[in-house]
Image 1: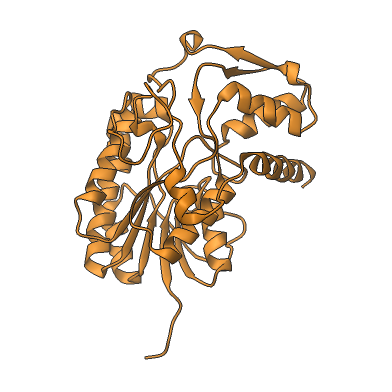
Image 2 (image 1 turned 180 degrees about the vertical axis):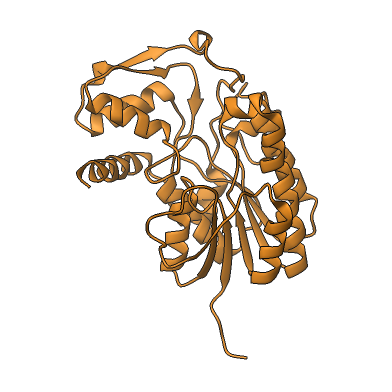
Length: 303
């Protein structure tokens, strides 16, 4: 039998992270099998694509068994926080049941599993959470992602749980907060951003690069891969400034004013990334990330 490339199976391949990760992995010479749910990326990025709703768990397991990947990256999730609160059954099926199936199939083919989680597993009462801090989700989305983590942890697989925070960038199947801010300020419209909610905005390009590095190094356990701690208001101001728009368009609002929210949000779910910096090196410069995002966003307007 001849030598073949390492095969990586990516769920959520058309998502905000997934679309960048597929590119990153194919560029590094991996053979990539990727899933999308409704929107196939216009550019296949050199991967083999399959349309699949991960709630069809028997098809999902069957495909992993057929493809026999050495690595599985489970990036597919129902990430709409209010949506998860409204549609608990769907949230459970996508975030928990599908993870259970991924774990089961990965075990059979003896694959190394990377599970993409979230800062929302924490309650936000202290901020700058370390990997070993006790999770305590305040909404259903966070709960389902924590259940997914536990399924991965209790498996006998070699695994890495990657927790980013407020992932942003261009190219996902739905708009990120940064894109929403950029669109508004470039049109000269006011945009509201929370001054009392702190996160660690994570640029999708850097997140993808670091997951590729994690796969290469086989970093095991839980790792926080995220940007610097800032309020959503500070983040929006930085985007406006980088795009050359008026910073006065960004209006500070407070969490108690968000009457349209269905789900409770953590007040400060920022992540401590000291462990990732030690293992992965200089891995996420927020200033550079915002510059790159602004450049990438402006390019989409020219197309």
